[in-house]
Amino acid sequence: MVAIRKVESPRMLPFACTPLLFSLHQLSEGMVWMSLSNQDWAPWHHTFLYFYLFIAQITWPLWVPWVVWRMEPDPARKKIMPWFILAGGILALYLSYCFFTYEVKASIESHHIRYQMLFPHLGLRRALYVSATLAPLFLSSLKWMKLLGSAFLGSLILSFIFYTYCVISVWCFFA
Image (cartoon, rainbow, N blue to C red):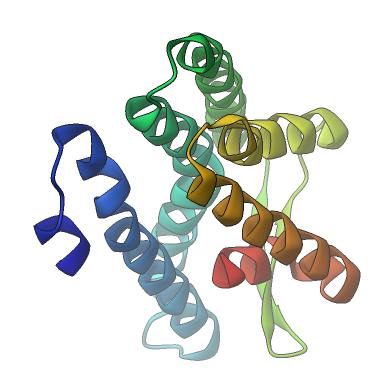
């Protein structure tokens, strides 16, 4: 709420709202955890699971490039940003299809949630996700975006090294 109150330009409002989206995202994962560990919450498991994955896998690849595009002051860089929004949109459409077509599971393993999405084209999916969510941050002329991108990239690398089996959950938490 503090970030939203400090907004000086309408183009900054989506960026200021991002912590609220993150908090909703983390709350939904807490609900996934509860549905896996408490039988009283089990009937809600699929609702929480898909809500969490909707934010993690569909919302972020669209949100991040769009937010950076809205804030970008450099016209030349701003013309490139829609390509990353398009990459996020393609990924969002593909994953939406997969969520309805393939099985999705979550389980608690070693004190983390492991999400299993047995969808085809894992390499392409990862490439589109990383390019949509990280590349705009490094492309931006706003230097604090590069700092944010560096933090996200560092946390992704650490997640892959130390938490490979549950990178979706851990990277979202680190982010």
